[in-house]
Length: 332
Ligand code: G3H
Ligand code: 13P
Ligand code: ZN
Image (tube, rainbow, N blue to C red; front, side, top):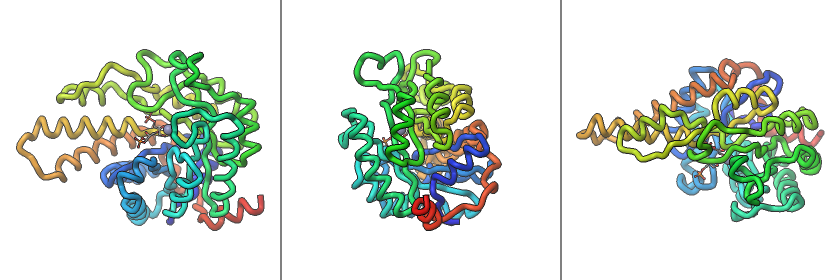
């Protein structure tokens, strides 16, 4: 089957009340590890590429690696999503490459650092929605800025999502999925102790806009086992905690349907390669250590597909094409 619009994958997840992992990819081994996990668990999957990933792969390599994943896994619904698009231009580029979903992160200016006003966010998101829906492409937006609740409140850096604004934002923009700021942050160093997440924001938004799938960024669990592997084989990562799986499962029950994971894959790869070289110092065939990295990604992602509840759901529906999605938006 060709790439599927992300909207369909998330709408089905709402119907079945499960979450779908959106896994960041930058190379063949990550894609292969993720796809093996999807195939074995029979799970739909969202493969996402950041602007950094587009640059690293010179765009065409990511496009064709994902095309290979589609050809190799015809029974799995796969969406290709742009992670943290910063402008209409970047979204146009991704849509031109064949992405079936884009994120416009209008919570920040084009520099991806400076927070925007609500009106500025609406303006850029509407532009992207108009353009993307003309191709049947799904749009994810973001309201609020990421960061730990305790680190950020009052600092001016973190702004948790306001549920009333969220409902207004969805109505004004017509977007398909909304990323909420509930206290998570990107990267390995999220929390020093058990996190406090603003779960009530999810239920509050859900009660106002029940049909819109919600998205949780910064959802890596940073498992201590992965940190230990890195550190036991020469790494120097500090004590840290991620988002516990139990919190993610609670968020899914409350309305989150897309769960963004990048860091756990990075940790798995780094640990596997460090371990491999420590145990096989004379090995120099890249297939051996990249193979170990691919296996580590597969194991991490397989566990998440099971824990998020997407395992076993790949065959639940007939995937629609971008053309069908385009007609849906026109008639809407
Ligand atoms: O949200 C950011 C993702 O983890 C992607 O990271 O921009 O380094 O590729 P990146
Ligand atoms: P993590 O850094 O927690 O994996 O989050 C990734 C993410 O949100 C990508 O958009
Ligand atoms: Zn993110």
